[in-house]
Image (cartoon, rainbow, N blue to C red; front, side):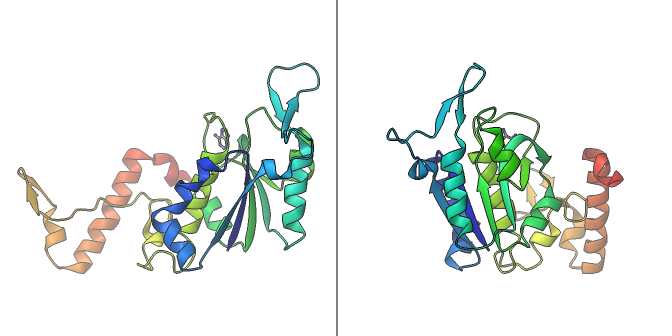
Length: 225
Ligand code: ADE
């Protein structure tokens, strides 16, 4: 899979997309991630990428031309399955959406700036708007990092334990059961007996029951979906 991210703040993305699982996925060539600095596509002599809003509103608006140039340059090289804009008014991101994105070959993510992007970009260049939740970030870069992280770990072969991503919370609309490691007892706090029993049938039944209990208690809304 190939992910192209267009941003005015590349520094905000470089570290989160160069650690742990994402770093390993890139090394294994399971994913290619390219960060494009929007400023490289600026057309005026000041290298500006934003300008005053028509109609006299306060605040600067990201201009359409550099964005169109950046997206067109990428589209000239290969077809894209989705051109995503990160914005608080997009569809609410969830595991189902992550699963869908993970099946794609090429996606573009344009990092937004709340209130600050020429509407014609959204009307004519973007195929999907995604929000990571009902709160406002200063820009879409952290949202893009979250989307990329959740997608990359789903690409086959990225997580060494094959079943690991599939047993995540949310994959079957259930929260994951609790997990424990050594020591079996700490300050008198004990690991549930069944997990030490070696009886895998019993252990699996316990895990499933824990998943259902936790979901009922913590996220009953998931059971309605
Ligand atoms: N940009 C600003 N706020 C955002 C949010 N909640 N989700 C995605 N992009 C954003």
